[in-house]
Length: 311
Length: 311
Image 1 (tube, chains in turn red, yellow):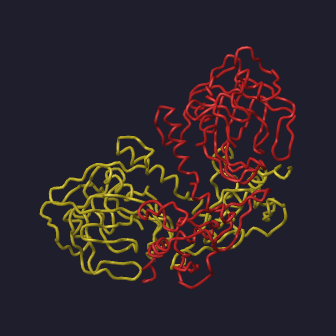
Image 2 (cartoon, helix red, strand yellow; image 1 turned 30 degrees about the vertical axis):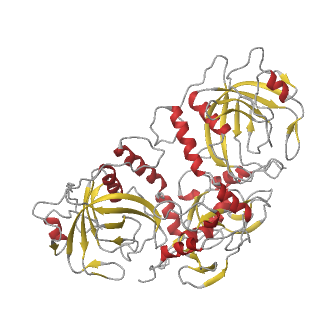
Image 3 (cartoon, chains in turn green, red; image 1 turned 90 degrees about the vertical axis):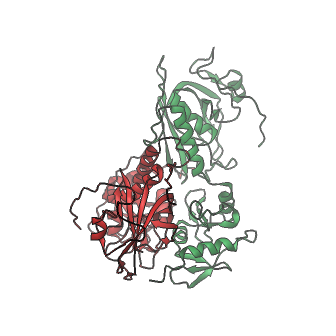
């Protein structure tokens, strides 16, 4: 969906002339009055400048909206058509990283609530929007949400009149950098590495999360979404340095992944699955026609376990 | 095995009067001449001071011993009786952390080679020991070894005469601390958190790595060792803050763990396993008599997924 690129200058605090409890017909009015300047989107802001406002539209089943305290699920991993989560969220998206920066630097966030939210799947506010005032980002965490995927959540607490949020550390304990902005940058950077690569997403999508070895598909959500893992045939990282390429990646269930990564399952040159401990044939690898696999990778994987049966 | 506590002062470099190629009858002679002052052990040194010498005895199937370059597997996870790995190694043991410190600070390591190594399981050097000279720790990594468990490995490179090893960064890219000793401390600290807790090890041991839900046991090594995972019923970390106690932990296979952590498998108060999406009975949880499970934890786990079937 192409969006016109508007320079969104982030501007914290309640705009002049706006009062808590004010009603707005739609996103156009929110935009014009400077209450929420991300037309049609839930989060206004950037990773660099922070988030200045959010709209609560009931899009996430894990959200809890109180008057004084809000549990807010960040952005990402959601299918625009169905509204369902189909992938893990990470802290490295602009909105999530921006909220983390707000927590670190003590930026206030404008909260707008959608009224009379309708629509089973893709919810919309049919009763307009109410401005609820300024909140601080009091905490954040990652957890598995009701839909079976990892979500980034934030605790927002309403500011009492005159209160100015305090900066605070947001990083794991081992990061003793006292520059809170640096801490955010590192946390987001770490998340970026946690996130699935485009290659991994492509292979999982190709098999619709069905295991290429045992054909299991682990359904984790009421919408039928499933959990799978991507296994690099030639392992990434030192000392194997396998490439993150489609021809080096399999879509596996966690059990087959654990066995494959430990050499208890291996592949032959012609892509049959063998028991790595007995070298006995088990079954043919399930493979999509478009999914070529490099025989060198398969050989290097087998070579890692060569010689262990000597004893 | 109780060992007398000897103050092991770490002392780098070749001791006076010792030459490369010198032969030693046993650990006693190595100790007396100051070549290897960790009697009967493979690694001499500490996490604080570094490692000053190692003995190569062929104990690890993943080791590669060259004249100029050695791939050395660190310590930990090995059964003293059988010699087999039965658990992952971590960088936070004294010997492994010490070798990491050597790499960071540029300490030279004395390498001693066991000669005529015998014994299928618990190998011993029956031909005495040879002093091979000083090496630098050139690199380190974690990988899965031939026995199916995670091992810490080090690349050692022989020093040319007169060479002094240079200090170098040992930390992931996101750690921009220029104090290399601090980098080691953080890396080791991070590893400590990766390591299984005593509680986790106890529960895995209780079920011999057999899944309490599906009864699968994933054998990953020729010795019959298996891979399992510990699932905290009430999840650890924010916002659930479940305790790391035996009564809050299950031994599961990775598949059942993935489903349980996403609410697709749940437990009833009387410890039956139900399909979390349909709420239908599946089977009784396999449970050792001595393993009490707190019903509060089971309820809090179920409560996380309550309400997701509304749509």
